[in-house]
Image (cartoon, rainbow, N blue to C red):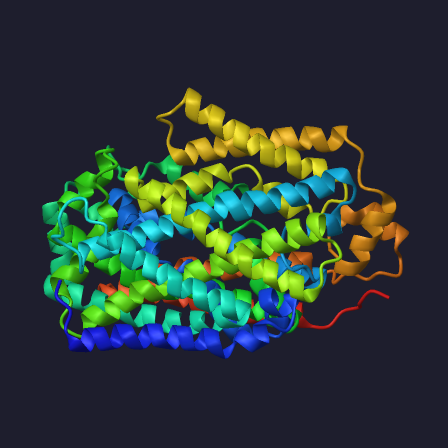
Length: 602
């Protein structure tokens, strides 16, 4: 794919702006440790929310969505749409609690909720585990996806064994590393906003061009039906379970919708909130800004982003039916996700080529910047400051923060190399991480609402998840990943419940201190509430859950409604969007009651 002067101008301007932002916020990031990792707790909700959604829009996301569509049709996206209920619970139940906790990382929460050697071990181990292992996997697959994009666009036709893609990605990592290390969270968040706007503009433009190329939406449907066996399934929002050979089995769908959201720890969609979502909430001005930011994230994440990617995936399958075979042949060397960058190479005109490369560069760099800052926050806040230098000065913490950011980037680069060499597809990496986190979700939810849970509960859930994941994969290597995840979750649930009841609860002093600070709702705090009669929780847990259910309804009816509008199915569009409007009206009424002031702790 040839680039012209206008394409190069767009690309150079983008990188110049990114570096300029890093330099602009360098001084502010260097003011304090909290400023570096949490923007001095002063981010407005719209910046924090946009930063959240920009982070989850990475270079791998359009490729992974293309792979899901190629394998399971439109319904394959339920793999991530199913997390919407957990996301809405984060908005209406957990966001305010996280902000009250005033932690810098979700791992720091461990020693707010628990005390003693077990809590200290859990905090340190989990901080290292997420920063070094989980974070490296994420950086690895995002970097590998960016290399795939380059090989299918500007580097197509390069000789076998060429390392040009490696050096181009390394250059982007270097630029990202510079502005991230210099500017901290302020630079990350501001560049996220710009990068998200650019990325969405490029994806929408490519979707319009791709659909127009195949002759419009009617021709697109006809070609999918004609070129693929049972191709009508590709367009179904819900799987067709009546067919003898459905693209998505009913059991897989049910596990995704009813179990995945509470059972699985997955970056950006953690049950009860967590990870970089908590970091953004901690960076917000106050509780209301944290709630609004998280709501903006959920709506943009599920309703705004998907359809441009899906339309390009449909067009890729219509033009290249072999993508469907690649998705089902089990050969790791054939990744259907490359159908997305293939269409960039084949369809993008001059000017748009530069914008689309900037689209992927922006998506890639926004995610890498967040992973660097987020991963470093664990290494510094939960390992270095907690165990190595408890009396570290601000200057020492800032120096350690910048060094940790570089270390996180280097570790991720090594994992990226491993994934490229072993032909690990992006959607396989998604599913691996989801399965690896199966089993810990429910304990992360219930620790807010049941006083009996202790540090050993979380340790058991975490260890059980890893052990059962390895055992299930060894005993049933061909078991569908959704079924395997549910089995791991149920076994882990049983284990941590037994451990909880077999070990001593946290002391009354620790539980009372947590209860006074966070003011959690629900009957699970009965004994502690009785001992603290002066503390008044919000008393709105049921109202928050109702808002979460309505918010999920808005998402799950808006998604097919938008698709029906695109394909001219006006009756379906009216039904879906009408239902979304009713749910939105009810949600606004309940949310107003949820925001009404209540008593605070004395």
